[in-house]
Amino acid sequence: MAVRNRQAASCAFGPSSDSARAMRAVCSPASFIAKVSPAPPDQRLGGSIAAHLMAVANGASIIRTHDVAETVQALRIAAAIRDLQ
Figure 1 (cartoon, rainbow, N blue to C red):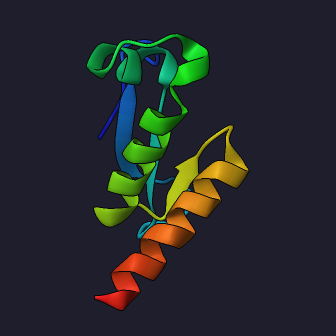
Figure 2 (spheres, rainbow, N blue to C red):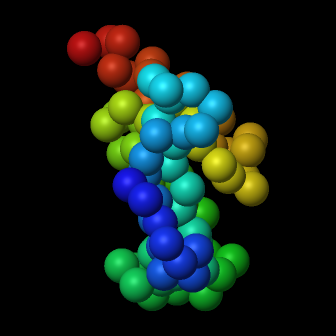
């Protein structure tokens, strides 16, 4: 996905410039999550994690997040659940 205006892109999924095969996801809690589920900025972590889990499930291999520990934990739990099935 090409993004012309950074402010217009609230959740962008597309090929990473780092690798022809890598897929990246960048979701802005300030816009995308607030539009879908209005909440104060300090209460949008769940939305950020949900967006990242969906991105990885759909092929993203690069995630940009400020909440690294929480996102890694969620991704590990999701992978463990997937592996149980």
